[in-house]
Picture 1: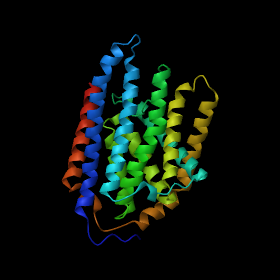
Picture 2: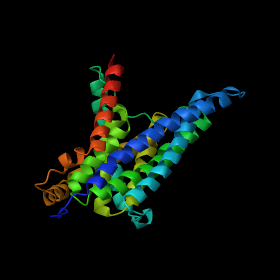
Picture 3: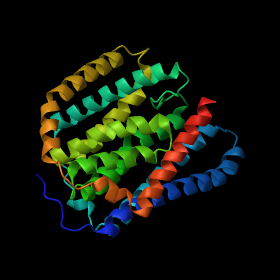
Length: 299
C-alpha cells in the first residue's frame, strides 16, 4: 500500500483549484476579446463565415491558455515537463484508445436513450461539417492541441501531484476536475469517464505519451465517425475498437481490483481537498454552471 505523507501541504492542494480558476478565466476572457477583435475584421472581408471565426478563436485560445497554464503549473508545483516520461508503448496506447472508445459508445447510447425523456444527449459532436478552414482549425484543435495541453496539465501535472497522497483519490479528483472544466453536460460526462481511463493508464504505464496519443486517437475517431455513412471501413474500425475495448476492460478488471485494494486508506483525502476554498469554489461554480445550462436546454 502506498504510504500517505505525514503532513498535508495546504497551499499545494489549494493551488490546484486556484490554477483551474485561472484557466477558466483566461479561456473566457481571451475568447471574448479575440472574438470581439476578429469579428469586424472578418465582417469587412469579402468572404465571411462566423463558424471559421469561432474555430480559429477556439484554436488560438487553446494554444495561448495551454502554454500559460503549463508554465504556471510548472512553477507552482516545481515540476518540469522534461521530468515526465514520454515512453512510446504501442499496445498500451491501443488498449487505452479502445477502452475510451467503448465508453464513448456506451455513453452515446445511454445519452440517446435519455434524450427520449427530455434530457440532452451527452455524446459530444466533433463533426467536420464545415468548409476547409473550419475543418482545418477544428482538426488542429481537437486532435493536436487539446490532447497535448490537456494531458500535460491534468495527467502530467495535477494527477502527479495528487497521486503523492493516494492514487485512487488522484484519479477520481483529477477526472472530476477535468470533466467540470468543460462547463457543459454534453462534454463533462464523457470527459469524466475518459479521464478515468487516461489517469489509470498514465499511472500504470508511467508514460504521458501513452495518454497524449490515446487522447488524440480517440478524438480523431470521433471526428471521422461523421463519415461512417460514406466510408465502409470507418464503422468496421469503430465496431472492432469498441469490442476490443470491452474485452480489455474485462481482462483488466482483476488488475484494477488489486490496484483499488492497494490504495485503500483511512484518510478522507476528498474532504481535505475540497475543504480548500479555491477547490470548493471551483466545484460549486462549475457544477452550478453545468446544471443551469442543463435546465435551460431542457426547456
